[in-house]
Length: 106
Image (cartoon, rainbow, N blue to C red; front, side):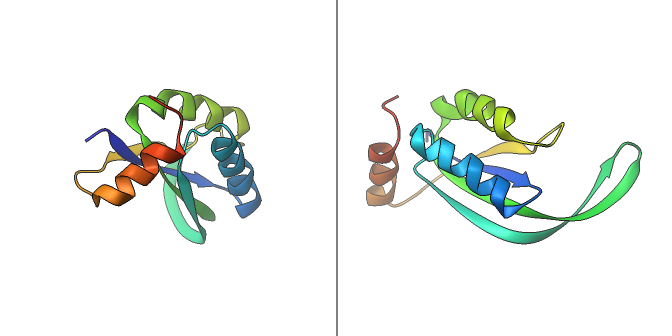
């Protein structure tokens, strides 16, 4: 299936909103869910970091992933932002049609 879910973490809800608004404006995503204050623990510069981030969950088409990634990197404050995609194995036909109608033609 050509549709994907893209996950991005940001240091704040404001940064998440800035990124999501641009991606929606460019029709690179159909929608996004922003979850505030996700507790994150991770390795960074040879030590374990502990922080609270916003998690952005976006739905789009796999053919738009590279452009979406470029746009996120331009707007993101992290040196190495999390930008990962998961394939949508199945979904309701009406929801997938809605995604297709909401993004750029691919």
